[in-house]
Structure formats: C-alpha cells, structure tokens
Image 1 (tube, helix red, strand yellow):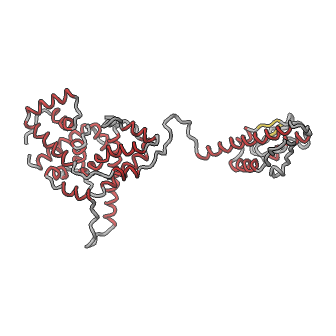
Image 2 (tube, rainbow over the protein chains, first blue to last red):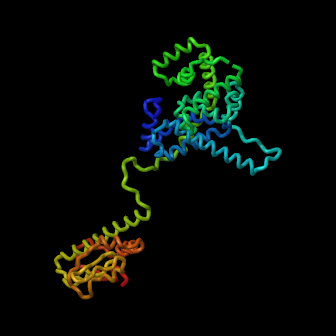
Image 3 (cartoon, each protein chain N blue to C red):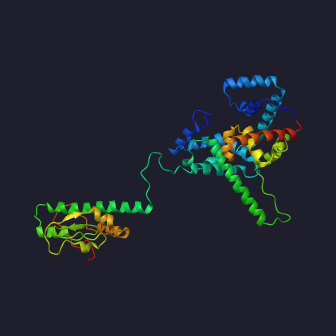
Length: 182
Length: 211
C-alpha cells in the first residue's frame, strides 16, 4: 500500500494540493487518518492527551512533508512519527517521575471525554487481554489486527524484520486466546 | 485451544478482515473459514478486538487542521545547487552593485551626447574618476590589485585618455563590506534631472568617494 485511496483523491494528491496552498486538503488528510492515529495511541498504551498527541503528529508531519518519500503509505509514515512522539513522551514521564516526588494528596491529572471513554472500554475482556501483552507483542498485534497493516509495513514501522513481526503476532494471538480462556 | 493447522490461512485472516485480499483470495479464504471451526473462532475474535479498538472518541479534526502551518517548503522542481547564505548575499550585492554602476555610467554617457559638446578632457576625467569597484586600465598601466582601494586604481593622474572600464572582476574581488559601501555611494549619486539633459561632470566629492 503506497498511498491511501479512500475517496476520489489519493493521499499523494491531497499532499500536492496542500503544497499548492489548498488548506482544505490538509483537513481531508487529517479527517482520513486522525482516528487511526488515535486508536494506535490507545492500543499502544497511551491513556491521556490522545488528541494532543494526534495533533502533534500531524503538525510534525506537515512541517516535514518534503521528507516523505512515498516508499511507505502516508499512514505508516504518520504512525512512525506518532510512535516516536510516544517514546519521547514516555522518556519524559520517566524522567519526571525520578525528579518529582509524589506527595499525598496530589491531584490526579484531568480527564477529558476521550480518557473516560478509554477507561470504560478498557474493562472489556479482549481489551484487557490485549493490554496484558508485552509492549512489542501488543504493538505488532494491534497494528496487524486493528490497523490491518502488512507484516512488511509493521516491520518498517517498529524497526524489525517481517519474520520477527510474524512471530510476534502469532505469539500475541496465542496469549490473547489463553487470557480470555478460548 | 484449537488452532488451524494451515499457517498461511491463519496468517491471512487479518487481511481478510480488512478487505486487503484479491477477490479470488477472498473467495478462497471464505470457503476455508466456512469449513474450519478454528478459523471461524479466530476470525470472530479478530473482529471483536478490532471493534473494541474503535471505542475511542473521535478527535477534533477542525482543531487539528487549524494547527497545521502553511506549506513553506521549496518547489519540487529541480533547484540550482544550494549556496551558503553568506555566498548568496555576497553574490546579490555584486550583481546589484554592477547594475547600479552600469546605470550610473550609462547616465553619464547619455549626458555626454547632449547638444552641448562636452569637454573631452573633463569627460575623460569623469570616466576615469575613481569609482569604487571599478577597475580602470590604460595601455601602460598595470592591473590594479584585486582588493586595493579604488582610489589607487585611478588611471594615472592627468591622463585624458578614456580608460576602459572593467567592472566584473573588481566587484567579484570586493569584500561584502566594500560592496555595501559601493552600493551606498552609488545610491548617494545625484539623480539626473528629468528636464533638458545637461552636461554633468561628477567630482569625487560629489560621488562621496574618499581619496
């Protein structure tokens, strides 16, 4: 899959239009890929500020659009950017936890509508089974099942081989089945 | 836990779920799933997992779109080799200076051809008057140093021969500071009146050139 074609125009067409000054083309690209990015973030374990993460992903992507060579699909490229942002975010959180002492009475971070919805759906048995997977297995598994990516695309995104991605997927599937007692 | 022994089919179940298979492969897979309980169960589980992932509140597309900056990149056509900012600026200054000197010289020549015949000596002197960035040469004069002061390049005191002007070499040899001074000096030259052209002889003082 080198370019999405969900409507009349491909991702590449919309990028070209945006470069030519058509801001509406950017909105169409956001519309096309935003939900997938949000789901990817949630399935990767993000629980707060999902929309901010998705927005940051798009802002960075459009700012460096000339570096998108089209060798992978735009969605895969967006996932790569978002993945990097999530890793940065986790690194920052780890650093903050090390330097900021937690005191009794500290307020919980604010929840937006998305967070509460995420919290609710996390109770489902299959969701819990997926969330209990190791980070690598969960990432490969959700990209394959929820995003429909090929093993080649997954390997490119997470920085592994197709064979390893296939092994991770099947191990994850076995673990999920065992978890839900199937 | 029962698993289908056909690894290839199990591998392709997510592709079947997402409609990524060709029509022929889709038909083949569907036929297998109908006859294989393990694959039916696994496909149902994949559907449930995928459906559960959709329980994510939609993001605000308008808000995200508004945050995207306008495209500020270069055109996608083939570009000339990039130059460093300093080199580009220096090159621009040289071109601008050369254009202004040519314009200034052209204006002097146009007045030379007016009805009042110019004094040859003074015309020659005006042409040979030192102009920053202008290299003047006479048949017996040596080529001036590349970065020497323009006044040092004056084509011999009292020599009334019209000197040839060589612009390109000297502007290329000037530093950025000299180039900027050249532009300032040229801009300070008195503009030609739009009325009846008159003979004009600019002295070095009028041209703001330090000797």
